Image 1 (cartoon, rainbow over the protein chains, first blue to last red):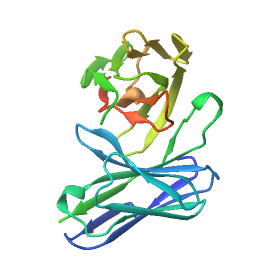
Image 2: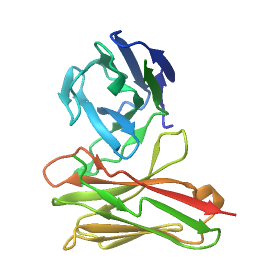
Image 3: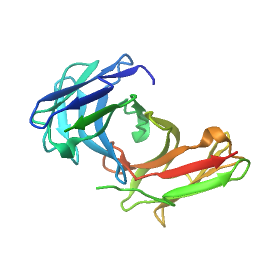
Image 4: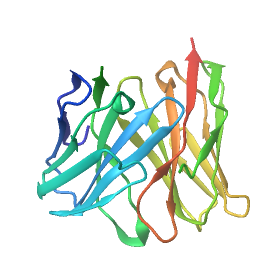
Length: 115
Length: 111
């Protein structure tokens, strides 16, 4: 999985608790992304980062926050988890090459269940 | 919102047959990419085709792009059991760099 790890790989939590997912890369890529994958929806972008301390919202950012204090790590936090946030979460990394080429490399995913 | 929409949603073929799936999108693009996802794994990049290209090959994969119809197709020739996976198209809009994924096509190759 191209030097990308996610932790934890599985988590079960209760509604209302905070949850933090970690994405770690060893590729020194500038861009990092958090997606969620749900049946019938493909992958939807939650938040992304275009550099250290530079982040922005994706299409489904409500209820999530992110932080990137160093190149290697991108954290996704659910401040107060809800059952609708039960999903599989993927981290991805990329560099932006000439001509807008943006091939992304994905981590193995974190399966989160909110009871 | 999803930019790409794949068709069909699911496909079952015999080993050795070809598999074709299609992707339609809504806005102008810089490039279109195809990814594969094996069960329980992350996505893996297969091939990228730029907006000024019409066809591209990579091994047993053939991708076409018709920007006038805003559609792309992925052909897997001589399928193998290992090709069993979900396939996603992802578009990069002309004025952006972020990917927008479709819901995917699930391909099952029967031995």
